[in-house]
Image (cartoon, rainbow, N blue to C red; front, side):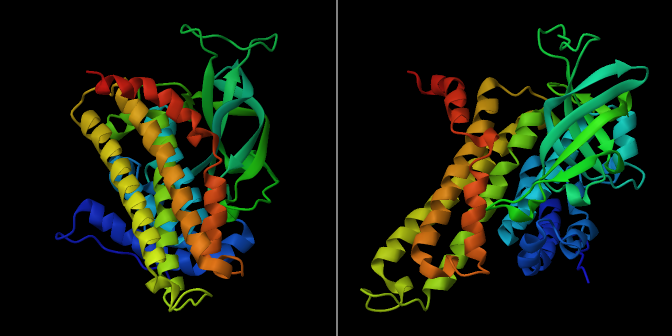
Length: 395
């Protein structure tokens, strides 16, 4: 039975949704082994998220969603990722892609997907790797895609595409860019190909899929590189990159938080040669723990400061600067690096506790190893961010 948390007058909106996340996290944590075994979120874990209305935290209130700000939403994602990395990643992929769909898709299509009790859940690749031709009323889309995280319980699948002319050449728009769009396609019109056999983030269900000459009405599409949301809510002015890429940061923080929780429990009674008592009482461990716990806390504070400042800027109806955009990318990537360090610190001190299955810390190790490989948090993003950050330090 899933526990839902009612809203009371004494709780803030953020506290209310965090309480719901914690209720769902209890069930997800208990389901973690099954999630990994099934390579996707289990039915019980899905129900814990859906019955607490968590998938719709970034959907507008007048569509029936929570309409949260980005920091509150990311705190919810972090709590789910703390319970289980795969569930957190898939939930992030769903909730952030839904925010993009609700904020930037044609209003009629977005309402059909999310409003009036529709309860749409999206998943899939929005990078324009597919192709399409314009036809009356929409597009005919073809392509093969990867990494449909959270797709097993999604009812709308994203497919990024570039519009081609009759000769199969990309159409170039007025800005000199390929005419790129994202389509939201009903799940039953998509062919899932499987091919998800990986070392970490196993339970994300990030399957390959294909669409073949599928007609997509114009109302279920959006421009890939749009910076102007359809919806008026300020959160959508953070843009596709701010929402979609930024969502990786709270997943990383959740992994680091869980690793610290696990290692503290493991070393309480752990005895190893060369130590005069339990490992957790040694000065060497305590020094190492304090350093890495500080790294985690600093990264968490940095992520929520940067995204909080961006949210405050759009709330005040001011445009984001180049430095804002650079900081968003910097924070998302830096959180991955710190999470990798923290998780490996815990792994080194745990000894065989991460080797024997099942192991929550072992999952953190594997999940962090995969999370840090994502192209959108590659170290090159720090190189690209630096030019917009450096001027603030010039004297």
